Image (cartoon, rainbow, N blue to C red; front, side):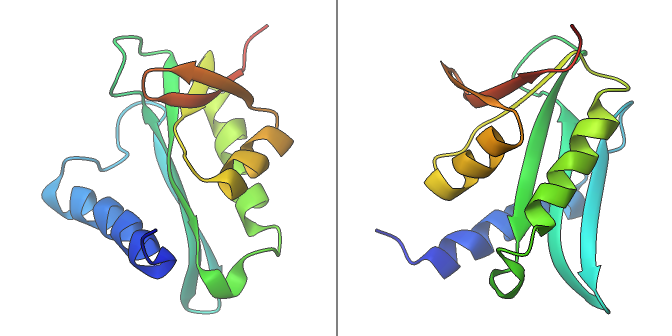
Length: 129
């Protein structure tokens, strides 16, 4: 198994690299990148994109939910995810994501996502009934 710190770092680095390169600036209609801060320190991030794996502009994708280890288990992930869902409901019919982390899956399921086994999708949430 890979070192968890190395995995976490590469996950955040990927989000940073995509921002710098312009590949993903969270600047299309309905997209957003949120951060939660402790003083001047960024404790976590979470983004919402139009799903790049689908041709449906009403399908959103939760991206790069990450909480720094020192700030985990304080409800920050739940707060970020709740804000993302609220934002998503204005522009998307459904949102989905992919994770292979049991801890992350538990958070998503606690927040109302249901498990899924489709391509590039481990969890999905219907926003419009």
